[in-house]
Image 1 (cartoon, rainbow, N blue to C red):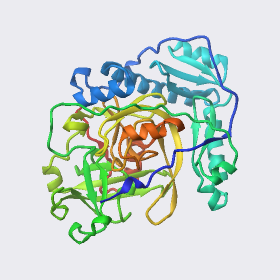
Image 2: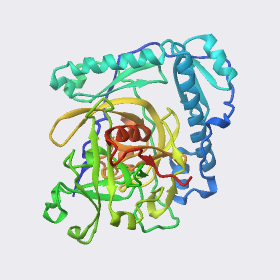
Image 3: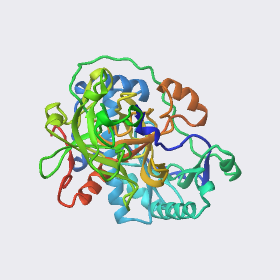
Image 4: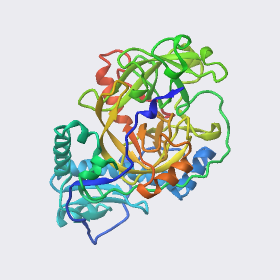
Length: 450
């Protein structure tokens, strides 16, 4: 069966600097961020995490389950603080991230702003360019890319803000055309070493991260090579109490029409059970520039259990979702997908614009975030979590063609490691609500245990 996640971002190769400034310096005043009770998010306790997720966290992130939850919570506190800081002092704010040792950092452009952030309990970093200026530079970069001749533009994979180094970069394919641009290498991604194994309680009912198949028409009338395979993302509900799932837009083979969605019968694909239809799908179509879909489940889907706030890891283990989150650079993440199950990493960039080539050959700009969790073909649409919070869904990766994460890590180690493109779930629910017209998806929200 053809796999939709073959539509991917080509992140391998040389990453070239478009706009750069000198590396920023660290302000001397540092402190551990004091938790803000109003910004805390409720999560499961460490002993409630499924065994497979615990294994993936310790294997891939090399931290304890409690540290994983603590860092995820700190990242959300940092995100809330940074949003307020930027709103109040837009010229002083230069970005924020979680450091390698799990501490929240606020980047600023003046020593006065550094003292304020430090007094509020955050590590600070003095940088020359504000976040607003970087965002304008990113828009200018994408305008420049759009004006390039087609054969040159196709060699450019993405433009993104490198918040750690306070600059904008473009990622260029390691091709003759890309090399001809003669731009220096910039980005480095974290290498994830995996050793899949594990155990835990098995739930045989379908969950987020599990397989679904889809086709342009009835499955019995569709040639096998025209059947697409993707992963369910987060189960959701709307104001009309429709049972929904948030997945990737490029998984819909017809775009704009309600293609059927099936739970696969691996013994006989023709006997697969239809559990719903695509109610919405978008791949970089409008100003939101997202890759997302909304699947509406029928009674068979609900009866199968696809109305629960859960996602799956390997060996059938289950993780319950307690809320939603925004991408924060350095925050720990784990992704669930039907091919590679739970793999973990960090958010490596929180603001990325890249090109996805859809089935008709059209290239579309898609916005999202980068993570370093290994992602393989078939994982498209699957859930990405930070702690026990819904963060985004998988859109593409530089390793989707690999047969395993072990091989992906070996092959990609010299070019920065594995990298995946995620679409923020909060952006998806906002776009889906706006596109609903008061119908399916109006007021859509991720299902949680709370």
